[in-house]
Length: 621
Image (cartoon, rainbow, N blue to C red; front, top):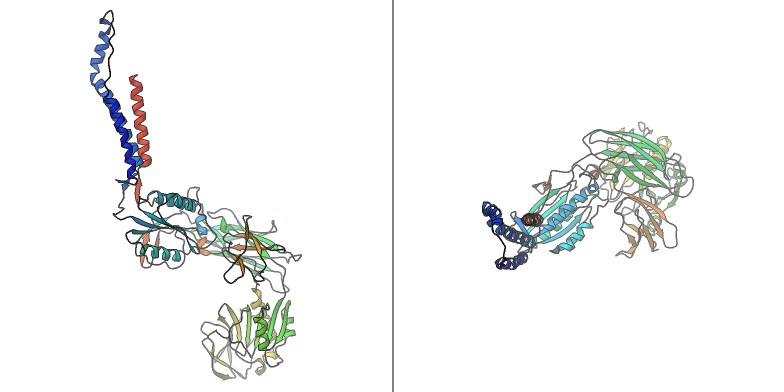
């Protein structure tokens, strides 16, 4: 047995006055009575129970002594020693606060509520010289309380913990815990991970004792995993929604689409165990310039309501602006013809120097078509097409030229080449490429790919590895079809920063024009933007999914929606173990304290002893 507060044993000093009271002798008073025979029956009863009479007074005394001893032990923090060691401990308590911790599968409690109880239990188990650090993690790690033995401060921090609509990536928190554990000479370091184990990313190996206190009991959850809103000129906007089933049982849910608060459509979704499904909605164009708030909701109940609802903003179509970059005129590419192939697109023809100056000057450009020329670096433009030139930073290299390459195959179903015929394509000369292993060949020849989608930093671009003027392609129907398909495919998902239908939770809201702004969160709180290191105003308070309103000073509010689309936070079955480097840490559901505090049992026992002593005293009366 250990004593967390040894000074509490000073309460044993109450034994001194108790013993003194019992040592005081009782003085008898003499009374004269007329006869003694009347006392005969009483004396016989007294002799019959003389043993009990002798024990009665010492028994009450011992009961009173026992109650004082029990109170003293409780005041001294008596606890059972469960292998706490000789050194004081430094405990790093790493708590998961990601979205999955809001699941309600812990007997009408959320996982976070149970996790907080475990944390408070660990705080109660601290010995006098132990110290504890509280670290919370979701997508990022945050030290809430540095090493301290102040139970009041630690308890307040734990009580203020809440979940955030972010993913769970504990690697940074564990590396932080490991560094603090190593820098604790004279202490026995220990790391306690409180989580459901639904985490992503590789976890580092820790060189100290590690405990995994698991919360959560069920996997019965489904959620919205992905939303794609596309708008093709001349066609209604289309909404694709992917739903995932994290449960090991099949389930049928109904996905309801609401428009400005009114139900507009619904789809029944059948989900296989651990599978997913896609629902499709055809939307109406907004009737005015005002944005429309759409809500997607999975009807029914599961253990996590947060991923059953997602909001998005549908905005009126905005014309796209593109540049046709070339240093010499050509007949097969024309800015006006490109505009005709993609309604809503405005094209301007510039030289490479003019185009570079325009983009560097901050002009909002959605599409660049490079005709025989290219920049030294990839421009920050969403959609790019390279004709008879290779994009920089793509890994593609020209190793030679090939004459009259023969088309051997093309991608018949890809959006760029669908409905196009290349079987009678005649090309005088084309590039012979290397480094195209990561690219997707759309038209292939005997000498390598002719049309391909290749990845570059931040995007994917379309490359035509030949000069159309040196081929019969401009004379064929496949040429306008190829251009129209390419524009539709590359511009379909182009969203300017303020036009995105939904943003990932945790994204930063910035002001590029320097105008102060206020963000109204889903809870109704107003948060003013603050200056970042680069001088731009920004707000980071986007940790909760829902509708935010960004209101610039002197302007109107702009609605923006934020959501977490994370499969790992939908498939939230609690894990039975964590793998840290090459080591496996088994889950230990339940209490995580190292020593069991006997305060409450001792106080209850002392109260019981006093009640027994009182009952005996009353019986004596």
